[in-house]
Image 1: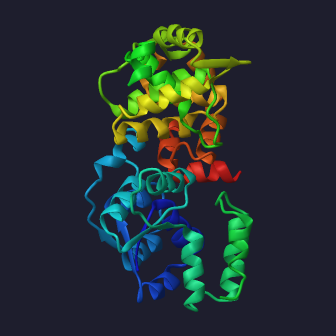
Image 2: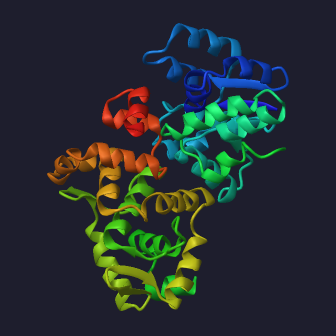
Image 3: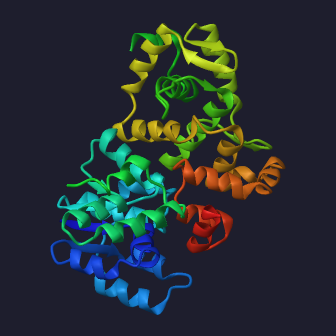
Length: 168
Length: 188
């Protein structure tokens, strides 16, 4: 599967949970991409040099043709990384958007349910579940991540978080 | 198109009012108060990015249309709209008329209209006002109320973000801080 990540997902996976090595293992069987705009968003502000290196090692930067149908939903502006992620997802049916922010996820639902567009999407928890299933994340890794999630603004439903404990 | 002709619903204001009241919001409600009617229709016009179909002027409360005010009264007199407390809803005849009018919209316009109501109708008074002042900046022009809301912008922006009405990129732009600062702000 080809996953295309939004900025907040990259910040959590790479910076906050320090999962670069695990993600690189995951990328042996999956393609992990970011649009150029997401790369810019990630690199804006203070970023530790190791995270800059990890970004380049883990994610392939993909070329995006903006989907005009999305522009009005983003206030006629393309500065937001999510519009690039969704544009890619709409154009490449074999890809899946990784978006955590409620606006982006709600919009994905609106596009698929109300507008009948084909767009696959998941969140960072979905990626963690895949990594767990592949045996890349241990119970200890998951316990650390869950504790990190509880102490951050990262939003996810408790049931979703508990799914990380369930045997596959 | 019998009802459209019978009630003179060809005018944009009447058409937009009836269709706005026929759409469901996030909470599956259709009824709307006058403020949300005004803002949903103004936001829909903003999403379309074409010449405005209805006249809006920028007052203290942002973009306001007297045309919409006058026409909602007329639609009530015609028995197409019913007012309960502060909210308007369609009567059975109004629903029939709205079904007829929706056929005149393109799919694209109807989707934008649905998105507008989906985004705004369940927001509080202050949230919807702030969202519109920031999204359509010219509506700040003659407003003193905007300056009052600005004093409370952090809490309004946080709330709009957590409710999924704006992205973190928009939130940081409105607050004038970086994504990482915003993340820290929300965690604290």
